[in-house]
Length: 379
Image (cartoon, rainbow, N blue to C red; front, side, top):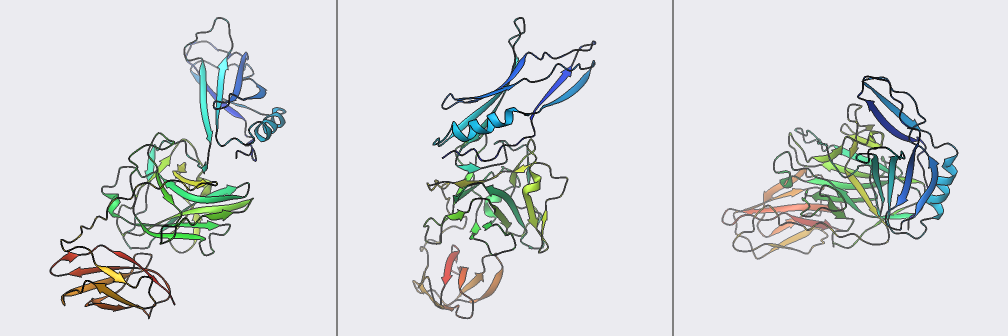
């Protein structure tokens, strides 16, 4: 449900430019209106756009209309007028009210959607960011959000711009931390691929949705206590000079909520990155729909795939069908780091490793490379 919990009190900005050769005074006969376009509910604030300050010729003027005494009215309306609403589409409208004004271009509108996700961006990526990762350092980017009420994180959305070549062949890890970035993550999903949304979701540009789920594809939501900070982490796994790109909104600067970890310590993103990373946290009572998973980029051999069993395993792994003698394997951890390689034959022993998630890739001289498979090691 919609809950009016926090109100930013910086005021309402406006900008004018005097194109004439004479000083001009924007009319104080104007107003700022707030209305929910879904229910038709209006927020009863009483504010004008400017107080009639004079603007000199060929000059730009920036105004900031303080909320002042209207803050209580605004807060009360947001807390009480939309109780139970699953979605609020709040339109902020700046308009003049003159009898003889030109009706064209006399109104400015801004839409703010309150839905089942947290977002700092406006749905449009003017730029993009990515990690340069030639040394296989597996750098991590984390975006901070705040849960004002008890909530449940059920999915994460990214905007992947169509740049940096074939980024779909790269891999990344997804993490969630609650309260402490230096603690163990509350959720992790490894070896994810950047999929490109075939349809546009709630935005001007496509978003890819990843549901929080375990290795059995069962939903694994993360509880968010009221007042807690939580972080969505994106770790570049594939070593490349141009990593997986993420959309970057230059019109909304929330860089003070973006952290990175390259050398083993967390720090804010550099000052020259002013904007919002297009990462969204999907919350609520319902599990979102994942973006369709595309086939593995590695082609299946003609003879069919190889089954590894038992999986989960306490150590030994067997292949079905039986492989020829000229077969090799490579074992990776969840960071994509190569742990071991050798001749495969028909049994591979993992008992020397700690319990967790691993990835195994088989290759035969006669049938080629088999798709990488996820292995769960238990004790």
